[in-house]
Image (cartoon, rainbow, N blue to C red; front, side):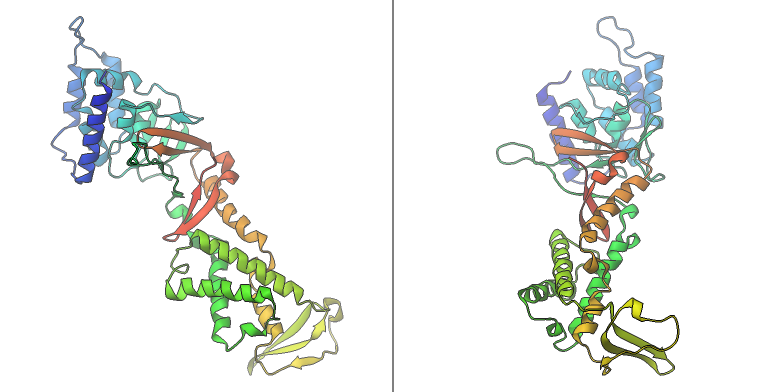
Length: 394
């Protein structure tokens, strides 16, 4: 087998090549070139061919299951210059491991080098899976999962670190997982509520001193600061509505719903209704009335109401009723619950049986295996580029 020095040299060369953005040349190393190199390899002890027909058939099957063009070219480029020992090890480990259902560590040296093969068009680690696991096949872009190992389907995500600290320790990537169209925020009701919240805050802001209609309190001051954060993010920074919703945004929205809920709850009235909206040929008119209860309203006939304000101007009652249109203001705890439920739904509705998430540093890689049955343990993190990002269970 190659020495650790050989591994480091090859590993460094691979990263140097990637940094220079060199492209693979289809004609430089072909499948036949690689296959013949393995086929012609002889055992130095007896001068007989090292690999028999059955082993070479496995190698051809490995090639057959690689996605066309760049992924295949990357594999050929990696395999072509391997030493005798490395070729022997590659064949010995080809399809040797059963479909993983528990976490595993990728061995340092050759295994790590295979993991880091730079194959455009597929995720890092997918060629490693095709090599290591029995009956594995990379799916390419035609399926909503990445790798099938026999009948078991995997979503594969590489979030291992790159580079090293000054002390030589590898950098660990703790970033949240990003997925494709399955994570589009436009599909989820919580996003509609976020945009509705922005719209209501902006509309209230257009009225002169409208926020001041709310009862004076320390909580009102807090609410005004929170709505200012939303306006700053939307109108000055042009975020949130553009599909960028960070951790601070989530925290501030949660606080906005909680504080507004307390303000609204403290403004209690004796009845259930305090506003009427009249509609007809003349348009629409809003009237503030003395509170009435649902039981006061007859199925038909007459009832008596007392009008408090028919001017159509904003009042504390109309402002509170307007805020109460927000679902998460009425039930603040539902906001975080819906964020996490969206993630759980993404996992549950996907085709993958397991999520294979690679963590750790570039030379100390952990493969985390999480069943889709644990979908409720995946947690919402942020929203970026209109897509939900989340973390797998620890």
